[in-house]
Length: 160
Length: 304
Image (cartoon, rainbow over all chains, first blue to last red; front, side, top):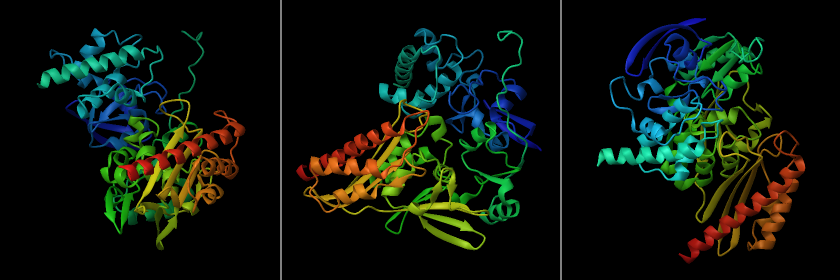
């Protein structure tokens, strides 16, 4: 069964004609070629496919494409735009060496950005809770947590 | 090729189905009644999509009920709170009303799976999926929640204690929808807590879930409810344990006896996460911790 859906991804509108048994992740990667969003476990365990749906982080592998019809989505490609400065979270990940193989990074960036969108002064515990659904199999968590702390500082400095 | 050219393992793509999106409850009931067992309700999807990929479910029709407006939200009503079945776990966790009135529910909602999953998973889905480990079930058991179920013949209110029939099984039959959950406001001087025991911080299926509430005045227990998850075919109340505490002056000896009784109330199995023996031990540990914590909380309030 096929269905026409409309998606707003990173500020752009897309009309997509898709099988209903595909996920939002399938559509993002295969139809829109936004391959920054990664397919890890395909079952909501690893968080590599995390995107913002109407501003909230969700696992795009657990959302049917037709469920996303008419919704606003931000992928890692939309966190900053070409020719614009990086998002403070992205800057901090680079500065703090919070990337090893890089596979978990897009999901981590989205979860961290969502955390700072709702709380610009997260405690270490709050950072851990917010990133608990994002697995890093290089186990580089220490650097990632440092990066989110640094990013929070950047966001706070930017606002004051 | 990194695996010697052999085909990659199947990631488990989703089977084919017809997707339906009713915008009214009546329409949803009609569809569910008509298609019966070949239809499956889609709420948050965080369990259903995984079950479909694993080949455990292959519904011909997927009925997304999220477009039905009156199934979502939290409101104060009749000396209690009504939570729509489609309210997400994060909405519940972040609700001030829930935090103040039902701390155990607030706590359980904060430890279910991960933040991403909690943005999609719904209270109704958590209950209807009927996992013995459903995180929201023990708190709703201690608060004696009532579930409003709608069918073609009208509405029916079921106490949560009668809702679960076995793993994956509830009293909901063909053509019925869980509409909302009513939780009566706890009595004065009632304290409650939820403790989840697992090995990981996130995405954890509990080894033991314990929720307890105690109405306590000058250390005298006027009422107590203890509920256990992951240690029986369904989430259960530990009634012999409750009887050990109710009407008594709560001290370490009473708590010890209640914990022993709770372990006997449980009927755990051994599985990949823990053995039955270990689970029974952990029931003791966590019932003790829960009751001690409630006692401390009540003493602090008396002192303060």
